[in-house]
Length: 324
Image 1 (cartoon, rainbow, N blue to C red):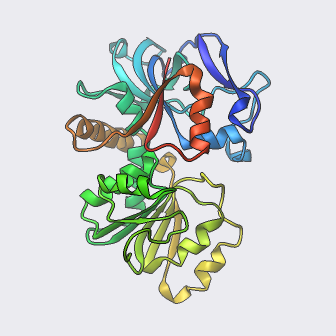
Image 2 (cartoon, rainbow, N blue to C red):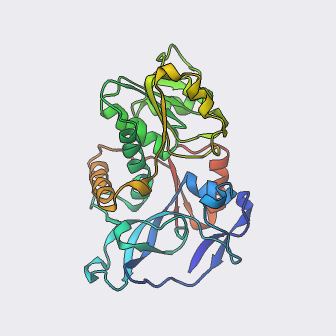
């Protein structure tokens, strides 16, 4: 089968299409013939090699990136009911293995697709929307509070904006790389548009934020801590710009009397059954038009490197999807 392999960490030029053996399912696993493959920010971070020990190692014969796919189950392993065969599903494949014509997944990481949801829309939402939901819960977000979504033009950010707005946020501010992208986010519930540094591009902004959902991280984290209101909470859900500086805690200590807090969030801490129920509910909501699947482009598998170049250039609004 065809797959995309990272041959060397670094630029997208280190990716190429290769022929590899079609996987067979082990115990508790299924094989999915992919119809849509999500291209996520974590894929780009892994490709750059910036995760170090937190990311997968690069085998001699390369690494197939990709963590979420949607398609049809073609084979099941021992312990998996045969009724799963031929079902349309979304699946989490781990930190690798998704950029391929067939992908392996554990059955507990598989969610059936409702009739009204396409595979393309499923991979635009399957990982991003649960991260947004649980990140807001981690931040103890409550109706009437103000929210800032940092790096809001990606699939996680758009979902966080929409979920917070629908849950009754008093204001939802966003940071983006351009005013045009910020204006597009207003359609999903954004009320204030800020530039990448957190400065308003039009009109006044909230004096402080109760919650910041940070998908970017990197060296600017301390400056965003200063934007928190008393008792404000910042939740890191991504490392698109790399980890925060080692001394970012000094920004918290300098504002000790404001009772601020910082947390990280990973879906790995959510029980699989709870995650499966939420994802199924979100898929149903998307099929009813109550949750938006925002797709920047649908590209062939061979264009995976081009997809990563667009992500690196900050050109993507929503999610790029590959099709085999």
